[in-house]
Image: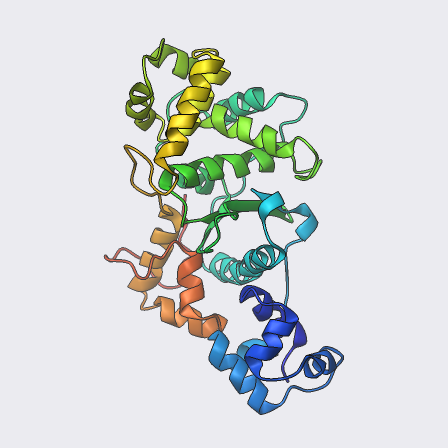
Length: 352
């Protein structure tokens, strides 16, 4: 018998209202209401649901074990985010939980190492976390790798909305970050640092208080571009071109570096605003002097190990009853490893 919670999950993942969902399935609204009240869904409607969603019948027979608490989730651009886009992204997290739990049964993943930094300014919190992790003032080569090394579960999203950048939350004692990979590579790195700020500064106070987003932005700027390193590398700025050239050291956007320079007092208000206007005229679809996109090294290692044991993405999809496309979208589009290098059967590979 189909579980109405599973059907509701798929409706949300498809980004549909209940009326739109009923129209897609070819039923009226009252039919869905009766099902939500305990009435069995007909085979014809269930077959239609499987056809349009890509999920098999067996998926809808399982219970929903876990879902994120929407009130504890940090969303960037929350004011502009529609309810359907938010619900679709949170539905992706439920699928990610099932993947993550399946992986944890087979691999020893890094344990979380995120201190809770309170009673400090965002800049002080960023410096404290860098010190705690022993990374000093050096630029961060790969933000996703830094998060994963310290026990953060990082998943990707392919959400075609400009209003959804990223989100994060704690699930029990494990931190999660979801990144929209349709943003520029620099944008995605900043999003990752922004969500890290929420995880270490706002776990207990919640991500929704008035200044939380501004604090996370300031944290991300200072974490990616330490003020001392910035001042030693760029004592003065002659033009926007200097910023576009220098930004590759920290692998950030020109806008982020412009902000950091202004925050550190290295450029005036007038120059900061002039640079901002010029950058807006360039548009936001492509970053000048752009960098290559980051991906997950942990997921690459996991899939390589599974592949060496003859377990492909399609095998995982069959076992979890989740469409392969959904899994690939959550795992940075890594379809299959390109080389061997697994471990002996019976062992749980340790990924650090």
